[in-house]
Length: 221
Image (cartoon, rainbow, N blue to C red; front, side, top):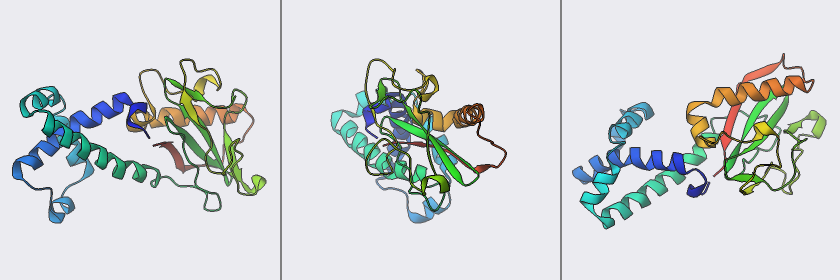
């Protein structure tokens, strides 16, 4: 996902990671394997947050060259981390893994061996095709285990393009103005999953055999 597509999340990531990396620069080395084995993501996150308000002052003090190196390391780290997010999601093994749109994401729910995924766009983006009556795409036995997508290639479910107005999709197919896919994934994923489940029920889909372990929000990158 381009960094410009999620400015709030990008800023939060850059600001919080700065403190952690500043500690590394002070010691002149990155963490050893034993250091990595003895810590957790939560520990690292807390370390990031400790310095979350210090970035502007640090940048002024250390200068442009240091800031440029930091931004490059952050970008490189983000490129390594983002592909891992989708791998925590459980998909039907017979179906190709769906690809979330850049500048947005997909909310996925599995019911009775059919996977339902609702594409969503971030603020400032809209779908490249009209989708107001097409809330979701499916993959399962009834589709021959292929995705019912408007796009060629079979795995990309939607495209979110820059747009001042969001008019091509259903009202719920856009992340809130004060959020983005990545911010929602970090703080309010269950709300989007619950909304989608209710929408499926309203469309007459029996949600009794809902596989809760397969619930997942996937962000594009």
